[in-house]
Every structure is written in structure tokens, then in C-alpha cells.
Length: 357
Ligand SMILES: NC(=O)c1ccc[n+]([C@@H]2O[C@H](COP(=O)([O-])OP(=O)(O)OC[C@H]3O[C@@H](n4cnc5c(N)ncnc54)[C@H](O)[C@@H]3O)[C@@H](O)[C@H]2O)c1
Image 1 (tube, protein in one colour):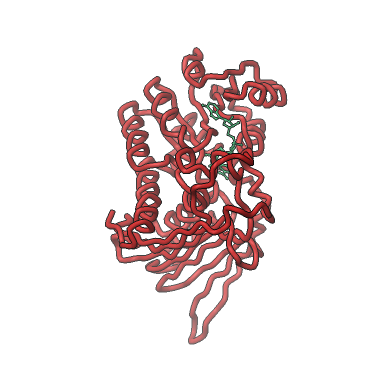
Image 2: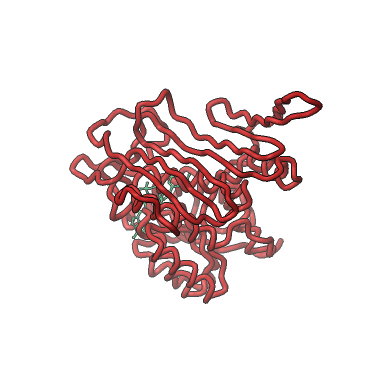
């Protein structure tokens, strides 16, 4: 058997427990050598569940584990850049949860540390690993959509604030509300399908109207720990518009709470040869073409709920890049472009003006 990759997981909360550890447990080329959490009992509980031998309270100690290849950062957002930079400077590869970082300054530090160390820095982009995403990418790469010149995407929640009063709703620790939390997922998927065009300007509005509601109808809002005495100083709805260097544009909408029918995650693409739409309401990918003088709907029979789980798919890709030298599907510049968009939408919402990137 070939080399086993030694990885330490930092942050033993919802995503580490619900997705990362179950994913690694299925990979026989990975050994999780340590789990770290400032709440040591959480690290111990997760380590016990997976037979991991070492637990740590302080991430700096993790970086000195002999023979460690990589860290996987599953902490609140404001620690992503701090821990990633420290790990890269120690010569470790880094996998990090989204969003990449809470500011452009911090994401640029991460990219610089990766460039200087020559190590891999990959940030979670799990939606690229859905079965429909794979199909759509192949369809586009085969030229079947022609030029993609416009898109829409979003993740609307009716009621679904994660960890209310905890770090998710505290701007200093999260960087913002649904725009930074959910926006990364669908803006990334849509931009990736469009061939990662360079963003050049954005405009946006943000609102905070539901800080007082405790109603939840979203399973996803179970992430993060609530704090009844805590802070809520982030938006609950963001809408915006992104222009790209190649002339393409994208409309976006992200909410944790808004008066819409139900939770929905979606993208729509408009190409010169075909259009496409997908949402998790029915999980169906629909493609719209024109042939022999008629419009034609093309409905791929893909069960988007089956196959490899998307987080596991992304982690497997990271492992594959490290062990087999596969070309990374994510490069740090994509993270810089993403955080530039997000930060500029917040700035535009504050100033009421378009922001040039
Ligand atoms: N890709 C996805 O689908 C997805 C889904 C949920 C969350 N996330 C991301 O995962 C990250 C974690 O989110 P979560 O929902 O698991 O949050 P969480 O609050 O459940 O877990 C975070 C954990 O980090 C620990 N922590 C805090 N400071 C630490 C430090 N200095 N050192 C070590 N551990 C520390 C906390 O004690 C907590 O256990 C966030 O960045 C979030 O955006 C991604």
C-alpha cells in the first residue's frame, strides 16, 4: 500500500463532525492523527468516535506534530486565514472550510503564504462536487452552451439563521451573514461553470430585518452554537449584481431569513446555444436549447442526491492532489476573487454605489 497522508483536523464542531470526519473515515489513504478544539471535550468526543489518538486545545501545537502532512481547518471564519498562514509557514498543506477568509487583506495573506511555501492551499467548494455540477461542467466544456453571458444564483432561506448570537451572527468573527456564509457556495459554483471569469465591479444591498426571530425551518441552521446573550450584527438578506471582464454578468440573492416560499439553492445560466437551470427544490437539471426551428428542453436523468457526497468529493480531491499530483480544481486566486466580490458587495451596500474591483 502507498503512503498514507497524515492530517490533523482543527475545529471539532458541526462541519468537522457532520462531513469531514465521516468523509475521511472512508479513505484508506488518510490517517487523521489529531483533532484540535479550544473546547477540548469536543475534540475528545470526536477523536473517540473515530479512534484518533491525539487531541489538542491549541492549534499552534498541532503544527509541530512530527510527520504531519496537512491540516484541515474547520474553525469559525475569522481563524481561517490566521491558522492557514501559520500552517503554510510550517511547510504544511492546508485544506480550509469556506469562506476563504473574512477580508481581502486576509485572503491575500493566505495566497502569499501558499505561493511562498509552494504548498497546496485548497478551500472547500463542495457544490462543485454534486453529480449535476460534473455533468454541467462537461456539457459546457464541450461547447454546448456557446458563450455564457449571463447568470443568476442564490440561496434563499425563509427562516434559517445558523448559531444565532454565536460566531455566525457576529461580524467580527464571521465577516458577515448569508452573503459570506451561503454566497461562497453558489457564486463559486456559477462562476466555475462560467469558466471563472474575472470580476470587475459589483453593486449590492444588504438588510437586517429578522434579528429578533427564533423561528427556523432549515436543517442547515443547526450549524454553530447559539448564544441567547450574543451579538447579531450581520445582514439576513443580500442582493447584488456582479460584472465580469468578459462582459458577462450575474444576479445574486442570499438570505438566512426572508419572506419567501421556502428554502432554495439555485443557479441559472444563459448561453448563446443553450440555457440551464438547477435548484435543490426538485434537484433536476434542465437545459433549454433550440433545434430545427423549435425550442427543446433537455432533461438529464441524474439523481443528484446519489453518488459521492459533495464534501467528501472535495476532500478526496485534496488528498488526490497531494498523493498523486492531480491538477487542483481550486487555486488560491479563485479565493481572492471570491472575497473581493463579497467585501465589495458589503461596501456597495454601505455606500449605495457600485464598487470597482
Ligand atoms: N461547506 C459547508 O457546507 C459548510 C457547512 C457548515 C459550516 N461550514 C464552515 O465550517 C466552519 C465551521 O463551521 P461549523 O458550523 O462547524 O461551526 P461550529 O461552531 O459548529 O464549529 C467550530 C468549532 O471550532 C472551534 N474553535 C473555535 N476557535 C478555535 C480555535 N482557536 N482552535 C480550535 N478550534 C476552535 C469551536 O469550539 C467549535 O467547536 C465555518 O467556517 C463554516 O463557514 C461549511
